[in-house]
Amino acid sequence: MDALPDAGRAPDEPSGHETFGAGVRLLARREHSRVELRRKLRTRGHPPEAVEQALARLGEYGYQSDARFAESFVRSRVDRGQGRLKIVAALRERGIDDGIASALLDLGEPEWRRLATAALHKRFGDAAPADRAEWAKRARFLAGRGFTSDVVSRVLDGGGTASG
Image (cartoon, rainbow, N blue to C red; front, side, top):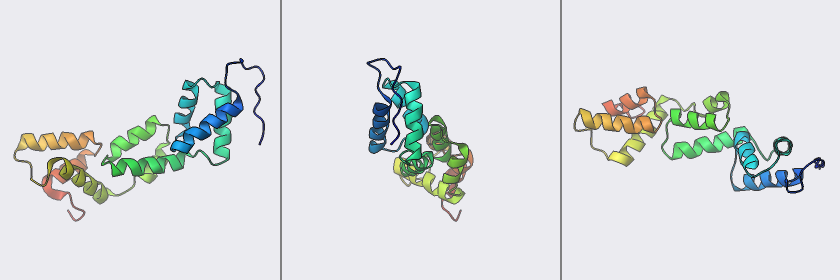
């Protein structure tokens, strides 16, 4: 293992080895994007140059991967009933490239409709909306979950199944 240069740091400032170790400990708990890891290490007082060196080594060793983080993140959010738009926005906040996000979220409209239908039934049960106000309430719920307007209208107009 290459030594990280610690010359010129303040005595109370974490060393490069400490920064790398802190990164490993964070990644041991859960996957992190490079942007998240940078923010957390900087918040904990690690110097910028040590953070960048540690991030490079973590990526080099395969400990940190934006693609692996995104895959885990998307799976988790889909399982929680979130839609494509909300997931894409959350991935962008975490510094994930749109290309990676698009590839992972290419489930096809029938699958997004199935997921929206499941979220809707979990929240409102199986009964159809009684009136236009109830329809609008359900539409706002699904839109807030991040489903596209096309998916929302198809689900609420009775086309929520893969066949419709």
